[in-house]
Amino acid sequence: MVVFNPTDEIHSLRCIPRNHSEIVLLKLRNELKDTTETFEIETIIYNSYMILEFVKTFVEGESSEIEIFDSITDELLYRGKSYATSQTDLENYKLTKGVLKV
Image (cartoon, rainbow, N blue to C red; front, side):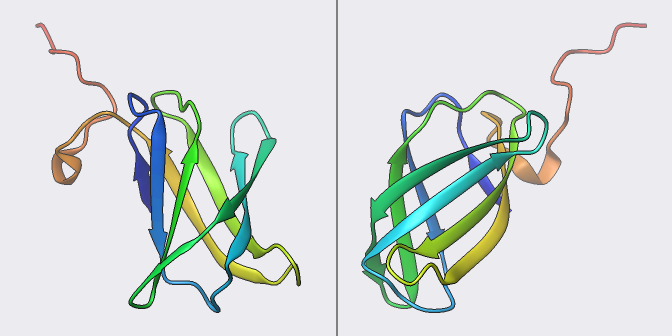
């Protein structure tokens, strides 16, 4: 799962694709709203990783399905999920950050 920080304006997605491509289509499907945003992105290849940088405003708690396609052949290169949170301690992640008062 890829975690995006909703306070950032520019996001970076790093993945190991099935094949490499210079220009890809990144599709983010919001699971709650059932809407899809598509970005055409020039990739950065570093070792066996493909790095994509894009501009998007995420909302805290937003979850999405990620699909990356080759822009020319329309071949699926990567599929995954993402979640937007500004919490940094992901190992002890809590859905509610408030203090419980008894």
